[in-house]
Length: 174
Image (tube, rainbow, N blue to C red; front, side, top):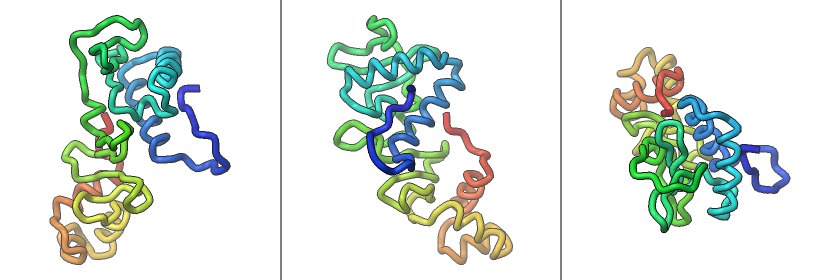
């Protein structure tokens, strides 16, 4: 399987599993074939000794190729050949912890909406406030507009707008 799950009793997805799924979607959106994603996932899991290779700081993608940063340099994960150029768009959306695994995901281009498993149980919130995006979006309707919701929650109207865009699905996950 593409997604490697940690053995446990709960059927809920962990934060790292959600990051993995979003990465797989992004790879598919770039036209990367699912069999290649599966093959690379298994190889990277073995090499990096992690259940979460696509939530790892070392995994990048360039066009339709998987690129991995390692002690040997930048390598094409499918062929094992050295690669000279790569795109780090995915890695720019993630903040990594001490173990090199994703700990925070910036969900919009402006870095106003973020998911962090240690804040609000991983529910998306607006950066700098810890106020969940669904709460701010509901406040817009309850308070009668963006300005009123911003006033009620003592945040900038731009943050309320970012929360509403996220909740409406008009954002990019790249």
